[in-house]
Image (cartoon, rainbow, N blue to C red):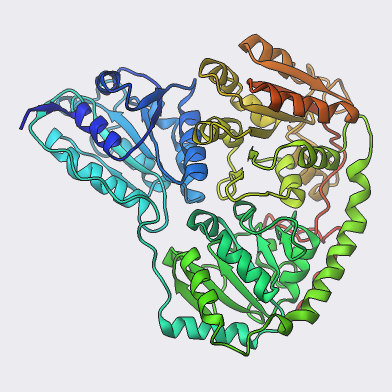
Length: 595
């Protein structure tokens, strides 16, 4: 067997795993493996954005669209430390990629060489990443690489997916050994646990006993490809479906039983259905504080009075916040298929069982539409948030992939966007990272080169990673960024208004030291785009928005559309959210109801 360098072994395995891209930033610690990538550049492409965090968000976005992992590559020290945000984001939302970080050479460990962390243990960077990855491996010799590589991919893709770190002393990239490349790991989704016959019968009994059941679905349903089976269940049984942001698109958005998101900034029918349900079938999602109105009974859910059938691939999520009536470890798609297959033998479970419940839900949907729809056509300057959401819904193609940052714009899209395909609305939901939407659109575009990819991001979030436009120009990626420009950290400013009687500090952007009431300030985002070689346009009138977005998508060029949005219009809360011990606010539309 020929002796090979460590970097060559790693690159060979990535190619064997059909990894098409490595997203990374060069540094002294990884030049050894860059040389190996250069030798195989026709088989695996290296894409270099302008910041390591962006590389991680790109890899995250790629997996969410393609459901297949790529790798990232960063150097020793600060470059790898920049990966913490994107790894935490991916872990929180069950997204997988291999983060290869370089470390100091083994011969210098514990001698305080350039960029070593050695306070508690030599070459200790892996401990920095420990909370934000499924597992960190640290092979310190070339002959340790085959096992570490295979175990890394096994860990990433088996069970609930998540990012994995391989922290490698940079001498290992260039040292040699005569070891074989390990066999490829099965692709994500190869292992799909199912319900036992006993649990399946118990699940059916819960549905049969219910009068007001709802589905609550999320990222687990999206990643499992459960959409077709869920759609058939929704149609056959006539059961309403509530979605987390990462579950949007799994069931038809236009179906009257698709109720949207729940929680403080959820849709009113979703919160009403959650409050009044007598059975919640939770498939592949979590009851976090935002989707449960901080776990206060009557605002979004009514556990334990409501029965809970909880299905998750990850056993640690079962019963985390609400004790399930029945909790099962299963793949979301397999569970739905099993439920469908078993309905033929259950004459006591029919669509007619829930007809009165559907009428009640339809009434709530009408109330909500009557309340919100008039503002979707309002022509104003600055532009109303509803108008932006409604216009994008009308003009963006059906196959568009949206990526969103954390911010007040995200609250509007959670509440009103109708995703028309699974994995077509990418959210930083669990960790709520600013910069995710700005950067992940690049990875989404590489995963789906023939689909339009549009990032809707706040002005604050865009300013955290404006270099993405240069990367898009460099690699000819036709991404479009729509900057929701309200001259503020709008979501936090709205919290100050709601919880501190309008006292504002540090949340609005003003020129000089004028403070509130002075001249608002932001850079000229469109000019920035043009300086990078992209297209850039500023929109201040409602009438100009649709044509600008249509043209940007048609041009198939990188483009930034700076949209001035009315900062005084806030999303109508239909649940609540508490920041203890600050008192929570009551819903603006709708009332809590305790079973």
